[in-house]
Length: 210
Image (cartoon, rainbow, N blue to C red):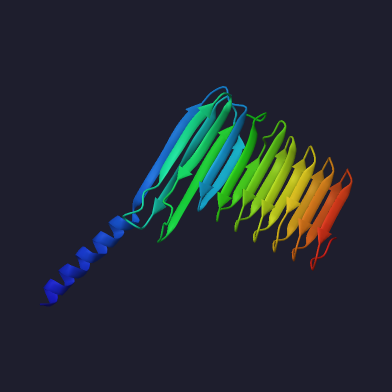
């Protein structure tokens, strides 16, 4: 009887492990891209400067609910590359993902994530956009204007060649070495600003500005 119960327990654990291992992956390279737009859910996104002329996209999404189905879609329209996650409308259970994208320095980026952190460095010709709900945003060595928006996460911008916009609800913003103008909005978050060359326009209800 004990052996039977042990066997049933092992089988149940194995089935649960298999269910948690559902995963989809991507590993693709693209040429002649001037802008990359990322639209993902429950995923962290890291973008860094590439040494060559290609855009290289790697990443994965894993989930626990067997009946759910996630897909990673990459499509090219003109010189814009779209990286997207097709997800169930009413998904349940645990889901997590991570995308790592390298691109030439003069490439623009538009990153949108739900419940994920965003890190961008070394890119941007005209604009870089970062939007997330509950994740943090870190952007460094950006060669263009940047817009960073999060609800409950923190924002860190450092080394921005153009203008910068920082919007949070309850997160803090640390903003440094900005060549252009700065516009920041927050409800309860605080701002720490150093080495701003342009003008600043800061609005916060209960946070501090220093």
